[in-house]
Length: 133
Ligand code: AMP
Ligand code: ZN
Image 1: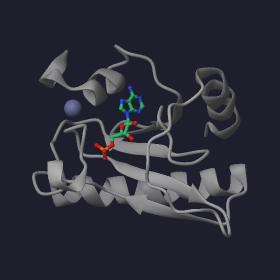
Image 2 (image 1 turned 30 degrees about the vertical axis):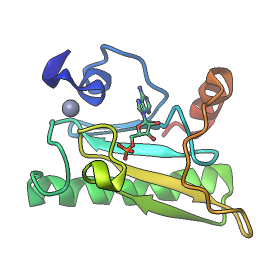
Image 3 (image 1 turned 135 degrees about the vertical axis):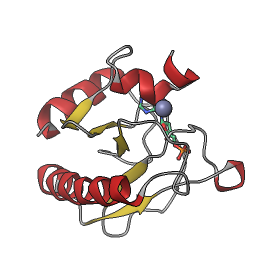
């Protein structure tokens, strides 16, 4: 696996993902252990570990895509708001060392639990079908 990195493998199509959006530089797909319904990850296809080793030009492109995907996810699943989360390092809970942004849909009054819950693969497949751009 390139860079020994699961997100590089997803970007290369070597392992499957519930894809929402793709262009030349960026990929977005559902988190398989979602914090909430529609939890989506946005990555640059080029491998870097985190925020600090990623070029500003790449970050500018990725955050523009985060905005575009978040707007679409929010509209499609009908959430009331969303969090953007980007973890760096063990202390921050980063488990995958390929820079990524979380889009976490929220509903008015929902309990804020930033905890992974094992996703149901059939539900995720159906949701990705619905949200795909
Ligand atoms: P972080 O804690 O910021 O490193 O987040 C990594 C996220 O990647 C977690 O929420 C995982 O559930 C998610 N994740 C890990 N492997 C996969 C995968 N193969 N497809 C989709 N999401 C994944
Ligand atoms: Zn990678």
